Length: 78
Image (cartoon, rainbow, N blue to C red; front, side, top):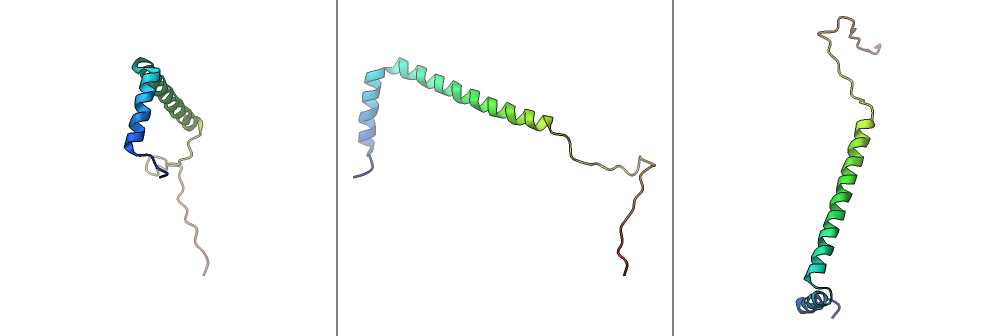
């Protein structure tokens, strides 16, 4: 008794279409879709600019071409 059947939802849909009309519902749908797309683009741009502003923390070593590199290994006394 707590859930609605498919017939209830169809009746609600018919009433909504009769009240608002298909043109107004189409406009509302396109406006909502544009807002969601704008939000996604904003979140995407915000995360990419935050990643670009962060300094690069990766350290690369190139022992073969740098003659000033000293390779040292720490060993414990036994």
